[in-house]
Image (cartoon, rainbow, N blue to C red):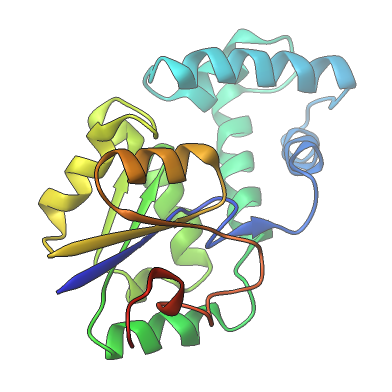
Amino acid sequence: MRAIVFDLDGTLLEFDRPYERVLAGAITAAGGQATDETLEAYFDAFSERFRACEPDPIRGAFDAIDVDADPDTLTDSLRTREAQLSQSPENAAADLERLAEDGYRLGVLTNGVREWQLTKLRAAGLEEYVERVVASYDVGAHKPDPAPFERLEARLPADEYAMVGDSDADLEGASAVGWEAHRYSGDGFGELPGVFGWES
C-alpha cells in the first residue's frame, strides 16, 4: 500500500489573487481600514504567533494590531474570505479520484490550524477525496520538523509515502523521514504517480 500526501496552500489550493488583497478585503468587509501599515503589522504579529504555535494565531494577531474593528469579526471575515477565494488546480478532483481508485491512500499535510485549513478544503470540494488531514498545529510543530510527518504516518498507514508540495519545507521534511518528494509546479496532478517512479 502506498500513500500520496499533499500540501494544502500553494499545492491543492491557491488564492485567486495576492494574499495581501485577500487580507485587505477581509479587513474592509469587517469594517476596518486596510492600510499598508495595518497589513504589515498583521503579518508581523501573525508570523510571530504562528511560528510559536500559539493558540488562535489569527485572532491573536488581529487583537495585537491597531485596527478599528472587532478581532472576532475580523477573524471570521478572513476565514470566510480565504475559503471563498481559494481555488484548486484544473482537474484536481478528477485526479484525486483517479489516484484513490488506483489504490493509493491520499492525505493532506499542512502547516496551519486544523479547522481553518479544513474549512478551505471543504469549500473547494476536495475533502471527500482524502482519507486523513494532519495540520502542524495538531502536533505543535511545522514542516519540515518530522513530527507532522510522523503523525501522518500514524494516521494513514502505508508501506511507502510520497509528498507533493511547493516549498522547501515540504520536500526537505519528506526526504528527512524517508518519503519520496515532488515539488509541485502548478500544472495539476496528471503526472502522478509517475513522478515517483511508481506504476499506476
